[in-house]
Image (cartoon, rainbow, N blue to C red):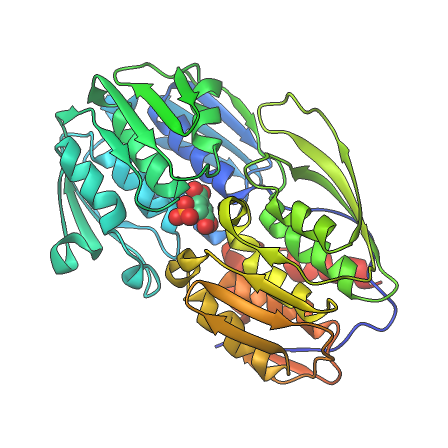
Length: 429
Ligand code: S3P
C-alpha cells in the first residue's frame, strides 16, 4: 500500500495546466475504432490504467492497436472480424470497459470471459446483463449474472425497446453497441439525459443515430468507418483543480482544452451557483465534442442544493463537490445520487468517512449527503480505498488542512490521472 505525506499550501495555486484526455471518450475511441472499418487515429488519448485495460482487451480480440504515448492508431476491420479471445478479458478497475464491452460481445458469435479487480467484483452487472439477454445474448456470471466473472456467448441479436431503470450512460451505451449488431431498430429510453459520447461517436464514425426527447434509436447492421479523434481534456479531472482554485487562498488556475459537453458540465453550474469566481472561454461550440479554457480563482462560497436531472451531469464530481461544500458558508444538500453507492467504492460511505477524519461536518443520507460548511480541516491519516476520485479529493483537501495528511493507497489515482501530482506541483510553484 503506497503512502504519501502531504502538506498544506501556503502561497496559493497558480498557473496553467492542460488536464489529461477524457476517460469516457478515450474508452469509446478504442471501442469504435476496433469495430469500424479502416484506420482510426486518436490523439490526446488518456494513458490512465482504465483506458489501457480497454486497449489490452481489444488486442486480445485480435485488433491491431499501436500506441505511442498519447497517440493511438487502431486498424479496425469491422465488428464481424473480432476474434474469439484465447485468454480472459481483464478490465482491471474499469466499469466502463466491462459494461460497454459486454454490449459489443453480446453481438458476436463466440465465447469470452470477463473479469476485473476486487472493486469490479462488487459492482452490479445485472443492469447490462438483463437487456442484453433480452436481445438474445447468452450471458452468465457469479450469482446468475449479477457479478463478475461474466461469460458471454453472443450472436443473433434482436432489437429491443428498453426503458433504463437507472440513469446510466454505461448501460445505454452497452445496449446501443448491441443494437448496432441486432436485427432492426433498437430504442433506449433514458429516465433523464446521461452523457452522450457514444451517440456523438456513432455519428463521428459515419453511423446514424437519432434522439427524440429521452428516446434514442439506432439501426442494426450499419457500417462504421475509421476516423480521427482528438480527445478533449476530462472535465472530471479538471474538477479537482477547479475546486482547488476556489478553496485554496490566493489561487488563480487556468485549465486548457477542457471538454465542455453539456451532458458533463454540472460541476460548472454548481460552482457558479455557489458563487465561485469562474470564467469560461469556449473554443468551438459546434465541435464533435466542445472544449474551452476555464479560469478559476479563490472564492467566497455559499451552500447549495444539488438534486434531480443535474446528478448524471456531475455524478463523478460529487466527492470533490463534497470537499467544496465543507468550505462554503451554510449547508449543502446532495440528493438523488443513489448511484454513488455502486461506483468504484460506495462513494457516499467513503466520502463521508474520510472527510469526517479531517473534521468535516458531513452526514450520509440514503441518496447523498448533507454538509455544513465553513469548517477548518485538520490533517489526519486518510485512505483512498483504492478509488481514484477519493484519492484526488483527499489530496486537494490536504492543500487546506492544518497539519500533515498521510494518504494511503495513493496509487489508485493512476486509474484516471497519472500526472495528477505533477500538475499539483506545477501549480504550487
Ligand atoms: C461513464 C458513465 C458513468 C460514470 C463513469 C463513466 C461512461 O457511469 O460514472 O465514470 O463512460 O459512460 P454510469 O453511466 O454507470 O452512471
